[in-house]
Each structure stands twice: as structure tokens, then as C-alpha cells.
Image 1 (spheres, rainbow, N blue to C red):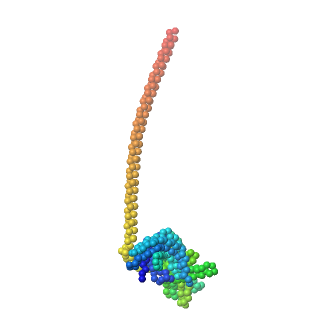
Image 2: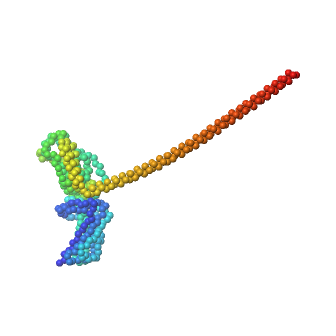
Image 3: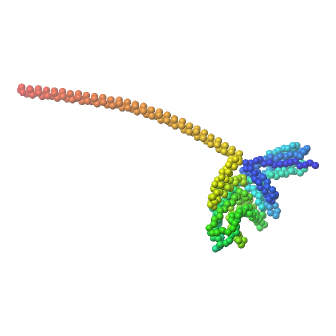
Length: 446
């Protein structure tokens, strides 16, 4: 009797890590699945090891990637939306352990993975070893696909009112209606009228799963409502004017993003419900739909430190500021523990940041040196311009002196000419007087 060979599928590690989930319609055991984003390629290796002193003759080794929606009604129904196949090997003989590589790139992952009560969205890699003789061998490896939303979800505060005319009136306020899967619901309950003896109050997170099977008149709607988490916010009676804070962490709750009409088959909704019970066991009920979205690829990344910080902020609002010193000590202890138990990735990131800062400083120093050199060049140019201007001024001064001397010489020449003219006039006048005198003498003689 020949025993079947050992066939295993190993997916390559991704930067997103793994998630521990369970599909309770298949098994109650949780399995760790590799997390993939919408654009990640899916690759890995197939290892085939024949039994001792045996060989495996095969005609084909087929690898497939499947994405499907499974409906768990009276009859199990599957609808595939992704199907790809590749040939990993053909016509060979395996005598010892052998590995085959596979890779699925550019896969259209349309929906996020989900395991619910009546519905499941699953992705898996399957391998079929088609033997030359005997039965074929099949194996399957599940994986987990998530679609984080990088943009901020804007949401306004929400106010709800619960009341019975002339008996009970209270107001519930929560900080927003859109929450990511690791968020914290914060709010406050204020009593304006209390004429009923109240016993307790509970906050709950409820998931409503609506699945449509069939079409037209034969369509069946399966609705499943499940309380995922609940928290008691009040025990005992209360009075008018009392205000009770609300604080509920979503991180420990098994949640998925809100989804509407996925492939026109199912819808997933989440609600925050408030239940008030009086001493006569009457229940006053109010619910508000919450929109949940995935902020990061990993599901569990809210630390105890973050939770404690949120607790402290809310306690301060409540008025519990008596133990501030103790809280500070706790925070300091947490910081020390955080530093001691810091991850290697954080250290590497810090080192990279320091290197980047050093490079930036070096670049800034080089820029400053270049600026100083440019300033020195500008100063030299200014000095040269000033020297040239001074030389030009000196030359202009010399020219002006020459022009002034020439003007003085011209003035002296003109004065000399005027003097000569005056002398000539005087000589002419003297001649005229001599002529007159001579004529007078002649007349006297006559």
C-alpha cells in the first residue's frame, strides 16, 4: 500500500502580519491568516514531499486563487467573483522534497473578507496535484483581504432623546457617528426628568446582517441580529440633573466595516443601543446606527496606553481629579515600560529619521556656505564699483579745474583788450583836441 505524498502551501510573509479569525460555520477553531491589501500580489511556494521510498509521478500541478461569497442557508450556496489558475509544473517525477513557486499579481479583490452568521466572503489559494496514476491530491490555504480608508471620516456629534411623557426625559450625546474599528465611543447621558424608579442602564453594540437569497417572488431575506458587546453604565436609581459619562472601546469587539448591498446579496449594519430598565422590569429602548470603517490593515493596534489615556481624559471630565499624582506616576511607568519594550521597527524608524535630519542639516550648511560665498562675491563687486566711481570723480574734478583755468585766462584776455580799446579811444580824443586847438590858432591869426 502506497501512502499519499505530503503537500503544503506556504504564503509569503506580508508587511501587514496576520489576523486570528474563525468561520464558525466551518469550525470553531480560530486560524491565523495572512493579511493582504487591495493591491498586494499573492505569492508563495508549494512543497511536495513523497512518502519514504516512494516517488510521485504527476502530469500537472495546478494553482488557483479564488474569491467567493458563501451563503449558509438551508442549502449552502457559493458565488465566485475571483478565479485565476496557473500551471506550477507539468510531467515530472518527484523523488525527494521539491518546491514550486507561484504568484498572482494584479488580482481584482473586490470585497473585504468577512465571516458572519449566514454569509462569508473568503479568499483562498488551492492546489491540485494531478497524478499519472491514482487519486489527485488537493489542498487549500485561506487568506484575509482588508480595505483600509486613508481619508478622514468627518462626523458631527449625535444627540438622542429617550422619554416617557411626564415621567422620564433624558438626553444621550455621543461624540460622532463614524468610528474606525479601534476607536472609542465617548459621550454623556443627562437626566432632565426622573419620576420613575430606575434599576439599570446598558449600552450595547449590535450587528445586523441582512442576506437576500434568490430573485423575484422566490427571494428569501435572512436577518440575523447579534449583540457583540454590552456595558452597564448605571446601576440603581438616579435623580434629575445627574450626568453620566459614556466610554466604550471598540478594539476588543469583533467588528468589521459597515457594508451595503455587497454584490447585491448582503448588508452589514451596526447599532449603538441604549436599554433602560425600571424596577417594574419595563424596558425603555433607543438605538442609533453607527458607520464603521477600517483605518489600518491590522485589526488590533490600539494599545493599553491609548486606552488608559482616554480613560484619564474622561475621568477628568467626570470630575475625578483627586488622584492626579497617581495617574502621573502610572503614565511615567507606562512610558518607561514602553521604552524598555519598544519594538525594533520603531528604533529603526527613529534611526532613519535621525539620518534624514543629519542629511537635512548638512544640506542646510552647504546652502549657507553657498550664500556666504555669493555675499562675498557681491561685496567684491560693490568694492570694485566704488573704486571705479571714485576714479571717475577724480577725473571729473581735474577736468573741471582745467575748465576753470581756461575761463580765467579768457577773462584776463578780454580785460586786456578792453584796456587797449580805452587807450586807443584816449589817443583819438587827444588827436581830436589837437586838431581843434590848431584850427582855433589859425582862426586867431586870421
